[in-house]
Image 1 (cartoon, rainbow, N blue to C red):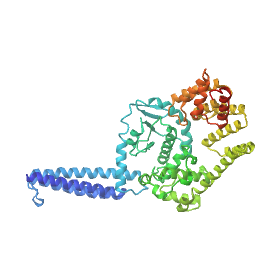
Image 2 (cartoon, helix red, strand yellow):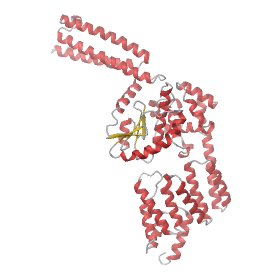
Image 3 (cartoon, rainbow, N blue to C red):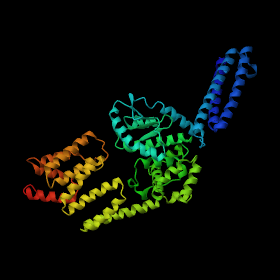
Image 4 (cartoon, rainbow, N blue to C red):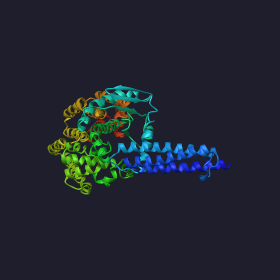
Length: 514
């Protein structure tokens, strides 16, 4: 019984030694970590020699081990501790070698190690893979049909992003498809993750049939190209402040400041956004570090042009980056942090004032003035703003009873515009044709319904096409009144001018029903 108790006590002691060794080694940098590990291994070697001596003599009386079984337990535990210290030393060396520019704590290294091990098993739900245009696609049973869509889009966009980073080679890349965001978050280790890039395996993970798959893909592909730049020049891929990396990725993905109410955006200390661990810890109900990161990068582009951004890529550590930022902006980080939103807010306020002036001119019948203001807005408008201005243009035509111009404008959008807006444009054109040829309206709505069924996650499809289809079918049947009333009662018509004309038409053609 005494032998068993001694073995238990030795096991607890050596477990404590191994835990202590882990924290001591992981609290050091590259060189000191190797040195301390070597010293600990020398002590373990001495322990092995002492244990072998005890096996020879049958006991180690000076430390109260009085049988070969007790000494053998000491020998086994010493081998265990030596192996553990060697493993800890290798892991610390690996992490430090990849992150030479940063001083991580033991807790941060533990999280990095756990993340790397977690990601190594993240492809378990995939059933196969295929290579296209130099990219390997790992897919699940329900996502194989998404490969062509993703590959075609990436082929159109990847050279633009590679050129930004100055990369001539695309590098090895695997894109892993997930069925849903639950499995994606589980693989990434972050709640509510939309996608992520794994530096260790050079993999992009995303949900390919989500409505924002294209933006997520370009964002993560930017990280891939940044990684390739780091490899090309022998730099740490995490040498730059994380907020700059994420902001550039959002910028290259096509994000726009129009998505945000700039006056309500909260700002925190940029230094808290330098590293992954602290970056994600800044999240609150009212604060998103990605928003500040993107808007800071966008402000640099607005003030100094896009060509400024790649000049920061050569920085070898955050302190060098911030020195370059200070030289470029002519202000210290604190001042930049306090003022980078000011010009954007001023510009946004002036832009909104122009929109308000255009609407006011339309209401007062000053159509030439409205058209002039809208032309000025188009000169600097984003794609999203151009879409909004197209609605205003249709309104302007309708207010002047220029139906032919409105039809021509919308038909041109259908032929040459962004396909993401096609569902929206079909419904709009059908609404205009309601005043000219309801039969054409029905054909347009049928096409919209077919698109809606094919792509339920279409980014700009905000329509219940079934209701539209029912209304337009009735309008083209022997019961047109019911169809018109569905459009009016369910508020399926957008343009006030058309609503008024339809109401007049119903009152005139169906006086008894009205």
